[in-house]
Length: 264
Image 1 (cartoon, rainbow, N blue to C red):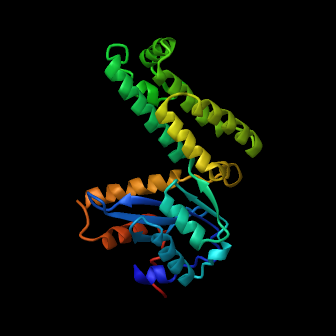
Image 2 (image 1 turned 180 degrees about the horizontal axis):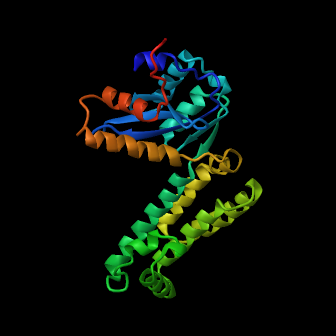
Image 3 (image 1 turned 90 degrees about the horizontal axis):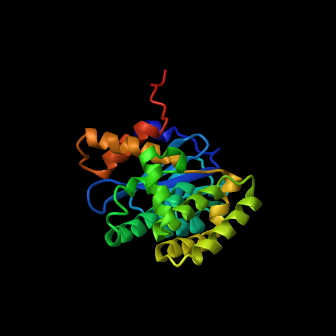
């Protein structure tokens, strides 16, 4: 593994992505860094704070990479990652992963639904999964449930419409159109009188440029999430690892695209 990694050349890497995943039950995490164009794992390290980005930069430089040449960084809205990128990758424009933004909205929607389910248990029965789906994926029963609940003008119904409107931002033709849609969504959300949705709106405002940067970079952590799933699957098959180092080595095998051919 060490020999294969020693031969890796990162000189052409310009766009990177990062994400953390659990190493063990509890608070043990590892952070993985990826080449977003070659879709390969560049580096893995323990932890998930801003120092992980600095450790990555050291390894990156040791493999002929240049932090000045990194133009884009895709990440979630982790304050630690944001700080690490700004301190370590001076020329990288941050793109916040759309998946994580929509997840924030889905979490808010779930909390609103749970609150109203306690107040209106009969009306909200069997509605949990219906509110998590997009209209085109609803079953006939779920569609009927949503149609009925929307007629009641519940907070959950309004939150669901706001979720769809937020998703619609990413269908804009360009950044200007996307910003126009995001402004409309923000104005609606911040005046919604739904505390959970207003919290998401404030998050959007605080991460405005990074959200809109997607229209230029088109970067998403979708494939990183898929690779993390493969890594977690390998961990389950191994019934866990004695150390995070072993887990990181497995990640290199799964996603590092390393060359293990013997010299001839």
